[in-house]
Amino acid sequence: MSVLVLVEGVSDRGFVEGIAKRVGVAVSVRELQGNRPDKVKRLIEALRAEKVFVLKDEHRYPDAAEHVERELKNRAVVVRVKCSLESWILIGLHAEGFETCDDPVKRMREVLARKGYAKVVLKSRALYKRLAEEVDIERLKERCSAFREFLKALTGR
Image (tube, rainbow, N blue to C red; front, side):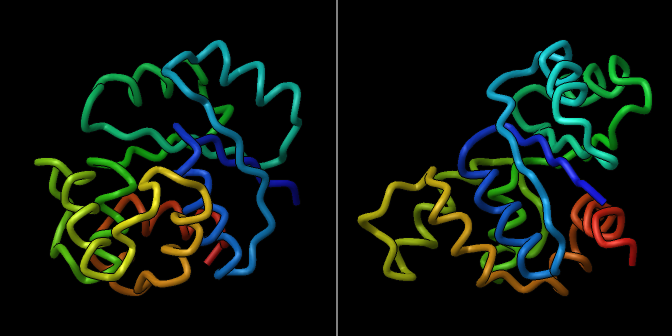
């Protein structure tokens, strides 16, 4: 089965690729770089995947996920990430207890500096793929309903 996951940016792409690899699911991940449902529709039609997910952060544009969901009309599963994927990573690294929206990127910088990643580019595909290998998936499933639902739909279990 072909699985397509559409994400907001390059770092999100790395994280999803890393998680998919860990759970043994082959996925194609593409970056949206914006909140344009018309672009999402074109990508879905062009790539012809059997299963499509759209991951949308709700911290900056809380209505964007709802808008995309409405426009797609069951063509894809829209996963509403309460804050951002950074909040998922922080929980998975045991740096936060629950999803918070204060400033997850700033918090990520602090946590990564303590882990020895002080001189890396924060928003990079390679870093987020590496972090996907380090996160505690069971903790994420327990504390993030959106992650749990995404993983369940992705793996079928």
